[in-house]
Amino acid sequence: MCTSIVVNRKKTIVGWNLDLLDMEYRVRSSGSGVFIEIFDEKEGWLPLFGANPEGDFVGMPTCWPYDERSECSGQGNSIIRLNIDLLLGRKTLPEIRETAENEPVYSEPGVTFMGALSDREGNVLHIVPGQGNLYYERPDHAVLTNFSPFKGDSEFHPWMGMDRYKTAEAMIREAGDGFDVADCFGILKAVSQEKCPTVVSMVYDVSGKTVYWCEQRDWDNILSMRFLKQEYIGCCGLDCETCEARLATVRGDDELRVRVAELWSELNGVRITPDMINCTGCRLPGVKTPFCGSICVIRKCVADKPFETCGNCPEMDTCEKLEMIMGRNRSALENLKMMR
Image (cartoon, rainbow, N blue to C red; front, side):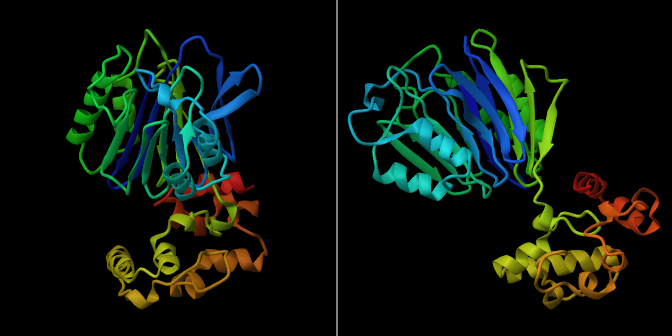
């Protein structure tokens, strides 16, 4: 039993309930990902579910009823290994999709595990060994519980989770464009289980690069971890990786340049034109916006010290220059502290 959710609206939000009976598990978080690991007597701890810094998420619901076609009958690929390869960054979602579309995929003896996979763009791949796979290019939402999407409710099993599927679908449809982490946890709580207990509930804010989770349905004790690529952290602590000016530059997206120029003009009370929206990042080689390249007093100060960021400066906590950034974006301060 398990429930997988992907919602693409203003943000890409991924949710996952791991419902587990009589198996040893643990949650392990590090810079390489937040993994839910299951103990296997032969192979030890296996990272079977969770999120990585590239924006990929892996869920692996069990399909009920079991399908004999998922048994290994010769050459092919283990669904478990494919999931682990994506989770550990050994393969990308397009590579997993190509494998699933062109080669046999099998599960474990007596159990039909499925793959509920997604990437940073919100694309979704559902794999059912022995039956096939379904690819959704950035859908509004996608839900997978424990019945095969190829069979729907044509076969019945008490653990197939059609009730959970319908509950999640209804709650997602009722939610607005601002669907966020709290909304996703609300759904996970509504579909959580006790008989085959929900042991981990996890939500990945892909846009915010932050993973949230709780164990044993302890909804008041939610932990979190944010993935950071240090080279993208600007001198002031702002995250250039998610900056729309950088995204417009690396994607060559002129429509985004226009939107950013209009927004920044309004926020700053000065005229900013689309041709100014060219930047590869504060501390990375390449073009900079006029502000980042020649006006920003923080960037000049860091270069004069010289430091990598304000996080290296002993005066950071009392610096007046940083106040204009911290007043608008408190996460910049947390980023600088992590850079120390």
